Image (cartoon, rainbow, N blue to C red; front, side, top):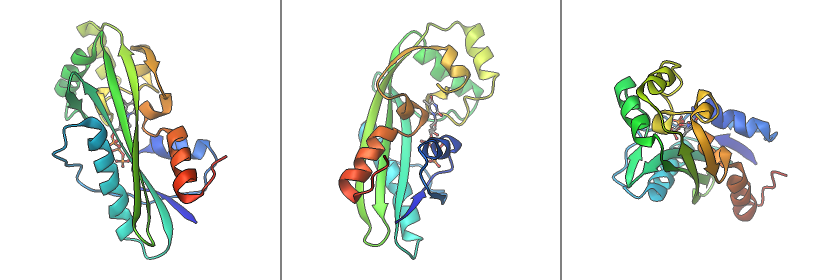
Length: 191
Ligand SMILES: Cc1cn([C@H]2C[C@H](O)[C@@H](COP(=O)(O)OP(=O)(O)OP(=O)(O)O)O2)c(=O)[nH]c1=O
């Protein structure tokens, strides 16, 4: 079956390429809006919207993969920062604390619109950051298209002290969970 990644994220593309999957990319371009405040439900809901928007635009049979990542700390959900001041506020909030990174995955088969959603959570500990370090990090420019304003795979690796859970989930696509979902629900084996 054709496999389609419904994502504009270069990280998600690279992660799927890394496991040798043969897939195409179709961007979803939905407005990421949801009233949901429970992070696991929010990321599953948004990934579902992305997957369905692509599935509905296809004529032939394909399996669509979509994902959404959000950061949660003390009941607050952090998405992507709008500007450097918002990035500063987010990093200040994450400084010296543990937060949770949620990624929701949705799989949809375009032939019958059968939909499966699930999520993964990883706990990330950020070092105590002074303002000088926060601004130096923001000035690397890598925080802007990232949930929570950092990229664990980039300079962000220097401000993370440890993680508990799947690293790839933090980067934006929990490959192990995805593999289980594809195998269990669609009989597609990635290994
Ligand atoms: C926390 C964290 C997030 N991120 C990224 C993963 C996601 O790409 C992004 C969160 O935004 P998303 O809305 O999940 O994804 P996206 O807009 O980049 O791509 P698309 O919706 O088209 O699939 O933050 C990192 O790259 N590293 C990190 O450490």
